Length: 257
Image (cartoon, rainbow, N blue to C red; front, side):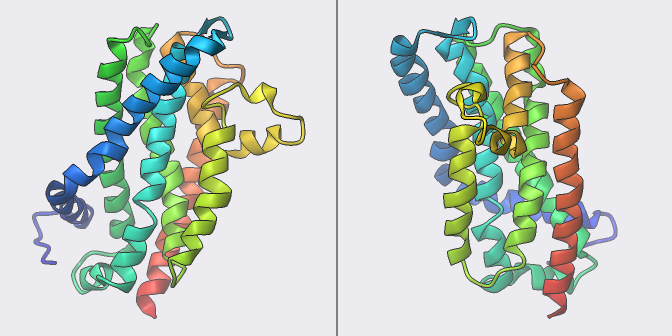
């Protein structure tokens, strides 16, 4: 992977990811865009007809921000597992990059920038569709792509660090089974966290997804969340900073082996 002096190493890594995505984007359309829309139609409208109103709004409007944030969450996790391990173990793309002026920090930053672009495209497309269903009730909905971008980095960074420390993809099944699926089900995406038992509620609060869902819901509905906005944003930033540190360190150690 050649890097000229005119291109920053981080941008070079980003260009590599975008080049690969341009060849494979058709495979991600269903999971990144079509699937959330189908979910909105089946759950938001279908199940919503039986659920009625939740916290003073129709179920479709209530579930939109949850689906929005969970879409970003799943893209962030999915693109930071097998692809990262594969570029270390099978493709050895990161080893090739290390032979150039690209450093471990550039590899991590380029990967995360690529995911932010991926998520932003999916989120904006989803918002356009939701407009026609009347699921947005405030102009503050325009900030939801920023919230989803922050969620993406806060989740993808630690998962990328995890993927860089393992040697077998069987560990990912544990990640999806015990982290991704419970987070998606119990982080306020489909029903209020307040309906959980007092024992399980703190686990939901610990999930970055719940904080992003709360921020997105506040934006799409035009009302303040129960917790202060700086608390939600600060928690996501904490995960981002810690994840970046761990990911860069994991990449550096892996490439020194």
